[in-house]
Each structure stands twice: as C-alpha cells, then as structure tokens.
Image (tube, rainbow, N blue to C red; front, side):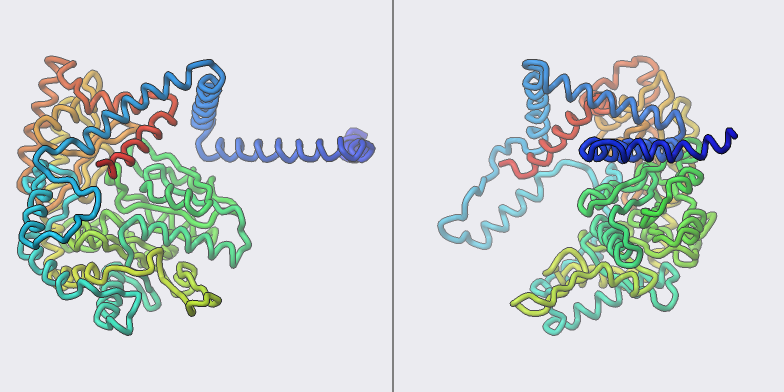
Length: 547
C-alpha cells in the first residue's frame, strides 16, 4: 500500500501542475529547471572538491557578491575603492613605463627618414635600457640563451629569410620544407607513431589555444556537444583559462594533492561528464615544476573517449632527453602512452630557438583537421590557415630549424644534463635550509619552495629581489620558483647562499623583508575582492603602451 502511494505521488504532482493556468505552469517549469541547474552544479562541485572545498568556493563567491553589492549600493563606496585602485595602477605604470631622461620619444613619424647611423645609435640606447642581470643567471626562465655562437647563426638565418611568409609556400618553398621538418623532428622526439602530425605556432599559448579549439570543434561535430567542458589541474597553465574564455568553454579545475603537487586523480575522474571534451596534464606544470601522472590521466581519457592533451611547453626540450642525460622520469609522458592525443612543445624555451616558435602535435590528421580554418565562399578566393595567424614570419621558422640542427640530439642531451643537474643541486640545497620546504618532487628544471612560518615566503622573495634575483613569485599557496636555464648552471651556489642569508636575516628581524614585493604579493593574495586585482592587472597591461 505504501509502495503504491509512493508511485502515485508523481502522478498527483503532474496532475496538479497541469491544472495550473498556463502562465503559472510556465513559471513553475522555468523555476524547476533553474533549481535543477543549480543543484547539478552544486553536486558536481561537491564531487570534484569535496564538501570542504565546495563550501570554501561557495563562501568565496558569496563574499565577492556581497562586496560587489556594497560597492554598488553604498553611496561613495565604489568611488573610494576606484580612487585607491587608481593610485596602485599609477604606481604600477610608473614602474613599467618610467621616465627615461636622455632618450628620445617618437610619438609621430619623423617628417623625414633618419640616417641609418643615427637609427643604429637609437637601437643601442634602447637595448641598454634594461638593468636585469640575465647574463649572470639571476632570472627565472624568461631568457633561454643558447650561446653567442648560436645567436650569430640565428641572426644570419633571420637575415636570409626576413621577407619570407609561410602563407605563400609557392613563393617560399624553403620555409615550407623547414616548417614541416621542425614538426617531424619534434614528433620523433616524442615517439610519435605513423600518422602523428602538427603545426608550428607563435608560442606555447597559441599551441594550447589551438588544441582546445580543436577538441571543442571535434566534440561539436562528432558528439553534438554545445556546452563543452574541459578538466584540468588547477596548476595547468593559465593559457587554458584564456582558451576557455576565448572559445566559450567551461573549465573544471581539479585541485592538487598537497603532498605531491600532482593533480588529484580521483577528483579528475569524478569531474568528467557527457559534456567533457578533453583532459589536461602537465609535464611539468609551470608553478611548481611537477610532472602529472600522464598515464593515469590518459587512461581516464581513453575510458571516456575524450581528448588528452599533455602540456610540455616548459619541458619541451628537457623531457625527451632526460633519460639519456641520466635523469629518467618515472613514466612516459609522450605518444608511447595510449590515450595521449596531443602535445604542446616549445622550441623557444629549452630548445634555444628564437622567441615565437612552438609546436602542437596531434596523434592523427583526423584530429588536426579541426584546428584548421577554411573559408570557401570568400570573394578573395578560397582561404585556409592552419592556426590563428594568417601571415607569419618565416624568419622565425628558419631560426628555429637552424637552432635544432645546430644542437642535434647529443647537444640537447648535454644541455639537459647540465640544467637538470643544476636544478637537483638547487633542490638539495633548499632541503638543507631550516625554515624552507620544497613543493613536491621537482624532476626537471623548475624548483619551487615555500617558507615555514614564522618565516614568510614573500619576505624571502623580497630580500632575494634586493640581491638582484628575479624569481617567479607564486600564490595559493605562497611560494617561489626558479626555472633553471643554462645561465643558472654556474649561479646555483650564489642563489643558495643568498636564500640561506635571507632566511637567517628574517629569523633575526621578521620585518626585514617588508618591501614592495612582499607588500604587493602579500596584499594580492589576501584581498577578497578579486575584481580589484583584475583592475590593477589591466592597469599594468595599459602601462605596456604608455608613453
């Protein structure tokens, strides 16, 4: 009898709904759909983040909503906040675009062209404006210098192909050939089987954008997905967030396991649903230099028949040579792993190629075709391009090709040996410093660490910056990393000595590191209204074109 009563309830509810006036019925249906959508989102957040993580996210969202409401409704509140934000923006822009006494400004074209000798003098002045000691290895990443001999070779390649453009392969067949060979050489480095293909792009960000766009379009065509989602570690590069923003894709960020820095596999599995188009792993991730469990992620991708992208942009010319250099990884991260369907690799980092060259690889042309843009109805003719750009600088391709064949396999094995060796020495030294803790297990070129209270991480960073070190300052959690390069190799001992001195100084005087760097990053990490941080960041970007 009770069972029969339970079965009849839905019928009673349906009958009640149908008895309502049409407008009321429509309102109830819309309300029901809205509630269902909200509950589904809540359920998924709980599955992925757990109750504590989902609650924290909810509290953060509510706090942001309350702050926005107060700013918009309380008289003068928003104006007061904007006034303070403008002060910070002005300060940031002064540091980005300072006054340069003695340096000419060109706000309009000169009435007449200037003599070549004078132009060269102006170029030298601009070249000498920088004061960062990158030659001494005091910069994290950024400058991937392959030596003066290579620089001369790249400059010569530039000169030979200055006017070339891959958009016109019939005019520049040599550039087409070199581009195809770059893709082939990188594919071989990553053990690509027959059928692996790819494209040369302008950098890691474009390679990632192309991969995400490819999986979105492929899922729409083959599976009819109109609300695409992608699952990626919270430590994955921000270029994936940019791609999601550009291409209308929902990101499901998966937290890392604190002890290892790797993506939480159980939560990644729980996040996959019928709208998921791809999953992402890093080798290594930019923040902490940790290599995700690529085989386990690829197994998830195979199970759910979705794309699996490995971001090797940072480790692109380190990963393939690590084993031969004496530093084997615990597992493969390339096309030897079934389920890996695309990889992004940057020759312009540890491949020492000129800035502006990256490669995105796909397991087959059936995947890559979704990267292409083709327009067959344009009055200007049939138009097709492989990536975002139309015209591209062929000189960069020539420089990249020349660099790769200049080094060869043995050359990259040697540089990998030196760079990973330097990173291992740095990691071992940091482990010995009381008051610091390594972030996970750094296997490649990036070493990240955090301070243990009462030592403050950003205070350490501030003291190091005063010594001329330009390290990467991270957040959530507060930490610092050094991406070792060839220039870092002879500088490791100096860096360790300065880190140890900074910690010792802070033990004696906790306020010693309360400089601009600590203030900026410390404040940024604790400001609850993230729109303020976004506004200041936009101000920084505005400063890039300020005269």
